[in-house]
Image (cartoon, rainbow, N blue to C red; front, side, top):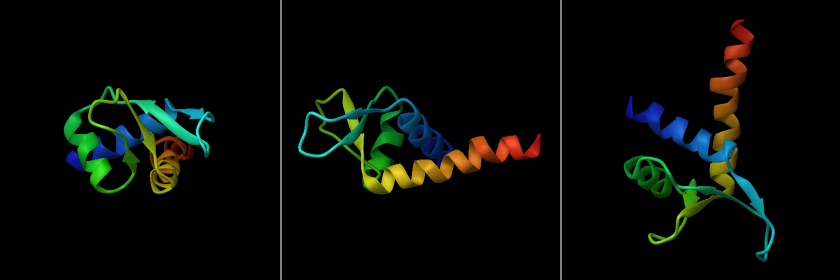
Length: 82
């Protein structure tokens, strides 16, 4: 179950993210209103980054790619079954 929570947290972070273009490169940022344990695990896997005091995180390229795979797994896979 822990794996699914981490996957769904990353998926939700991606789906609720926005592009921030006021920085040197465009990044996808999201509010970190999720389990800190799951956020810590995702950060350990280098899927997201952000400061401890920050209320938001940004997704790394690896995190974005993983989230896109999770869309296939959880959202598109469900539509194929219908």
